[in-house]
Amino acid sequence: MSALSKTQLEKYADVLIWGLRTSRPGFKKYDIIQLRFHVDALDLVEVLYGRLIKLKFNVKLKMMSTPSTELDLYRSTDKAQRDFIFAGEKEFWNSINGDIYVNAPASLTHLKDVPSSNIADITRNRTALRDIRIINEDKGLAGWTMCTYPNAELARSAGLSLKEYARQIAKACFLDEKDPAKKWSEIFRNSGKIKKWLASLNIDTIRTESKSMDLEVKMGEKRQFLGVSGQNIPSFEIYTSPDWRGTKGVYYADFPSYKDGNYVEKVRLEFKGGRAVKISAGKGERFVKGMLATDRGAGQIGEFSLTDTRFSKINKFMANTLFDENHGGRYGNCHIAMGFSYSDTYTGEISGLTPAVKEKLGFNTSAVHWDLVNIEDKKVTATLKSGKKTTIYEKGRFKY
Image (cartoon, rainbow, N blue to C red; front, side, top):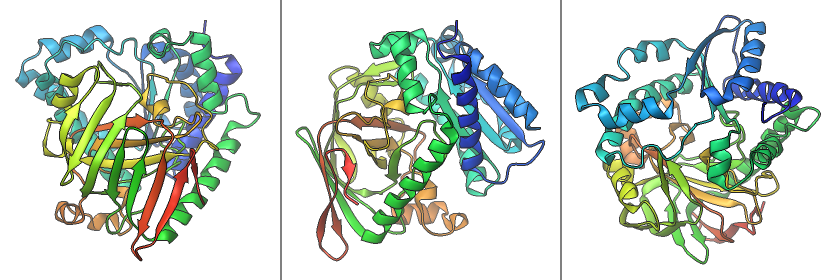
């Protein structure tokens, strides 16, 4: 029996198509759409596939690895095999116009005993496909979106019943609204007002203070805030990729995190000179240190984000980054991502954002991108280039 009703499945499919089309205006008949999914999400995938076919898209289905096959890949292969795993996929990724990922993993901790070096190998090799997607996205050639489907493993990991977990997803994605896509269009417009306001401030640095952290990030030159682009369902965050070199102070993730088959909690990072120089965690510390040593950029910041409680109705830990990074709750959330930065936060012509320009402007480069979430009550203060200080976020809301 499906965790979502037939009506909710139909509305979820409609919202995902809204997200795909919003991420890249200009889709046309017979464009190639890759639909990736875990087997637990088959109920939604079947509805979504039918919708896409009726819209005259050419759809390629790809089922993601099971926990058993993924464990064999990460644990039992040698480096030559891990280097081969994505061979031949570059041409296909260059040919597609859209990608939809329906996430419903059957295990979140099956890789906990795998050596971090093996995980790092796969992470680095996967980067080539990620970079193809980003390049084609920046050129307007491809769009993407993703979602999460409720299953028993996600619910158990979040400490919720499957019914409550599914209710959180329905609430977050507005699946019980008469017209969820219309609601998302409203969120899209309202988030645009916040981004426009932030751009008008001419921010130099941003300081985030809570009971457990005091972190300062430097906005950087030629930066903008983004968010609610259709690329994630749900997505309420307003984010930027700051100049990593200006990061200093302490960041603390009070929300747990599942990453590459591992569970971690209470991650504390102390930054100096832009890099995480002291790393600790209440659980999974060895994994955290290994992940942040994947490459030079993995120990540097790639994203800074805030979510407004007026948009997000998510109020539970969901054991899923897509939902946890968009947590609303009582105080909203702040999250940073360790690793690569988003080139579309650059305000200039994307084609001019060469590796040399990225380095000059402090855009971070890494195979890793790991979101770490804090939901404490916090005050966020911007120091403007004029020298004036102004509170931009407090009690879970932007102060615009």
